[in-house]
Length: 336
Image (cartoon, helix red, strand yellow):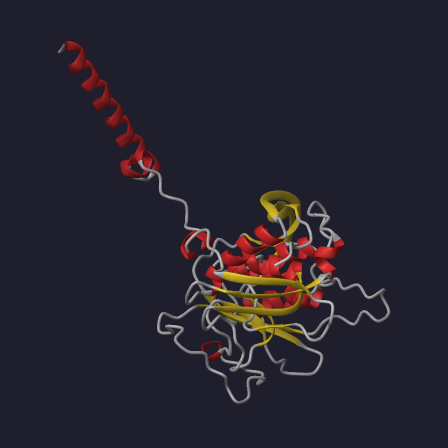
């Protein structure tokens, strides 16, 4: 009995210590005793490991145009989206022709702009992944059928299983240190005129495609882009570049920048350090520098000026960790 009372006293004293500590640090005992679960990844949200019901993989030796029955992007569309573009699957069929294995890998693992660049090019310091050349060059046709109606992310998971089965693809994720640009606010608390929190009144039910989407005063509330996407937009003048996003995070904007602008403009990965959360609508436009007499190398100046004036953001050189997909093993496909 005495030992039981002593045990209870110790537990009571420990609980009081936790209460005092929680009050001092500003959070509750429940959070101390039961830490919050990490955010659910897109793989978990889509259902974990999935497989196609039937699939055909063939090396393409005939050439022809490259196409798929829906866009294989990861939310970064590197073209002007049209109202008739198929951005997501409408049934159970996956069909793609004359695409490199690299394209199927970036689709399957939903690689960001920076991650795709690191995998395709041994360019970034510290992120040289040395992918076999045939993975980038050899073309394949893949036809597959899901067990039923599938979302785009579920198709990605099925593609992961297919690549592991037919190409013996084995990968792992790794965080590597590299020179980066940190995306930060130019003036804290003062966003630019073309960066606004996504309005709650926009339920993303439809995408508006104005008759004149190239107008110079493109309205943020009428971006011709589906929610969750970043895409090129028609420029207001010849020689200009313009892109925008609708209900996207600034982390996604940061990852997309080296691909939306080109490696010549931004030769480092960009990571979000703004501290701003939630979805945003934005668009920005700039005219690339004239590099005809300076070895075709930009300083990034005109883009960074536009970034500051239009979005209220700037890039700060630093070193940081970038997560990349590393290919451990891959071989040409087994016969169907």
